[in-house]
Image 1 (cartoon, helix red, strand yellow):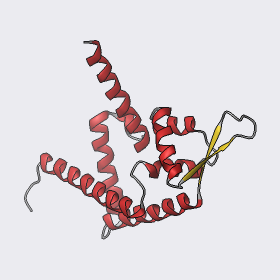
Image 2 (cartoon, helix red, strand yellow):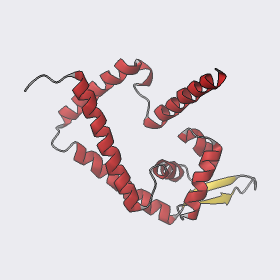
Image 3 (tube, rainbow, N blue to C red):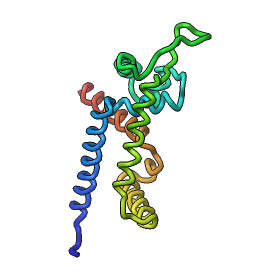
Image 4 (cartoon, rainbow, N blue to C red):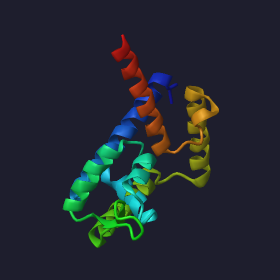
Amino acid sequence: MSDVSCKEIVQRLGQISLMNRIAVMKNMKKTGLYCGQHPILSYIIKNEGCTQKELANYIGVSCASIAVSIKRMEKSGLVERRNDENDTRCKRLNATERGRELFEKSQVFFESLDSNMFAGFSQSECNQLSEYLDRIIVNLTGEKFKSENIISLIKTEKEIFSEDNKEEDDD
């Protein structure tokens, strides 16, 4: 086997990411969920009765953006808003039965996709790959983001992007 260049490895990582996104989007189309709705449903199911503000903070988007998504999801029968018992101005979010069913279907798909992606890998190989990926993350960012989850990384990306836009607006 010939030596593989760093550029080829980076291209393969990009290819894997893209192939994964395509598979996810195809599945989301089948289930009737949009890609952004899955993490919203996940949070609402795990935090039954949460507010839109709590959800927006977790996802890392504006309250207005979440309000649009929730309105669309409410029309689709995935979530419902209920008045808070102690504060009628506050609306609490709950997943409907349909929302739970579609979330569960997509969750099963994600688990299947993950296991298919690593079919034929031993646990030792998975551990070794994880260590290599951790090293790449540290090489890119230092220790700062090594243990961050995808949601917090997306928030960081949005913050950096909005800071860049502010600097351009100030010029």
